[in-house]
Image: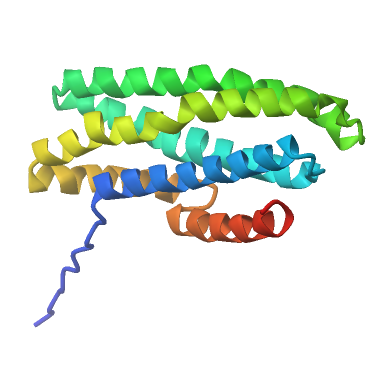
Length: 197
């Protein structure tokens, strides 16, 4: 007689994971804030540190977390008839996307800054400040208006289904996962701390 064992995979709470990703993004914004503060105080911040911070912020926020929202959460909300939550999430996503013009402005002068021309530092500071000011409250507001409401409104089966969909996204994702980002952010906080703080 052949005995078959079914192993049930326990999925992480998908809503908690999405909110944990927000905390990582906020820490990256905090690092950018300290870098900008250092530049305001006359510290010559290495272009590599600045670009690594912005690059990781864009990858984590836009591609990893934003990819889940666009490819998994929004279609799931549409499919399950949660149109108000979908509209709120799309609104927060659009609000975030509008902030990216400031990052684009920073990218536009990074080559000049990297060549040693500190005359563009003011443009980096100005756009960094605007980005930080506008983007900082978005994730906390999104947690309250979308993710906490979603968690309360989903059944255990729906949470499991959403968790499976997010796990499928992660299997196909070609970059770091949340635990990797948390570790990289800790290292960046340490590195930035040595230079800026």
